[in-house]
Each structure stands twice: as C-alpha cells, then as structure tokens.
Length: 116
Image (cartoon, rainbow, N blue to C red; front, side, top):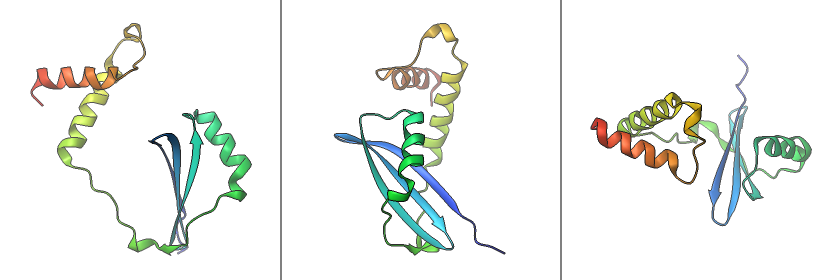
C-alpha cells in the first residue's frame, strides 16, 4: 500500500499581517511552511500565489508524520459553532452580508435566547 499524501493551508491573522501555514504530509514525513501575505488575501490571490511560487516555498525540516499531534476540539464548542453556522445559513439574503463582528453578535444573541 502506498503512503497517503495530504496537504492543508490555513490562513490566519498574526498581527500585523495575514499569514498562511501550509502543512504537507508525504511518505510518512510532516513539513510546514509559513507564507506571509500582508493584507487579507482573496481566494484567487492565494491560488495564484501557490501556482507561481510553489517551487520557492521553504518547508521546515521533516519530522515523522505519526509524531504530529491533532488538536482536539471541545464538543460543546463544536456544538455552538454548528448552531451558529446553521443560524447564519438560515438567514435571508436581504439580511445583508455579515461584517464587523455581525456574525459573532448575531450568534451570541441567538445562543443566549436558546439557552446554549
């Protein structure tokens, strides 16, 4: 059986810049690369960056893949996230796009009403 290759790109805000953590597992080896974007990148900008700069990425020295630790998510937190996401998806388009903490405030209001 051949080893499974996996990759994961996580975009997050690490003040003062937006960064990407590109993780890859291949042949039982785990490597990670940090990509600094500056301003918040759009999906198409991230895709274009990866296509143009894939060969220039500097990955960390590999470690054994089975030595990696998966982060466990608290079940109550997961339940709240699912509940809030379902509230967001059930809104009508006329409610306007979420922004400036709208999603968090709306979720907090609904959570307090439902007793979660």
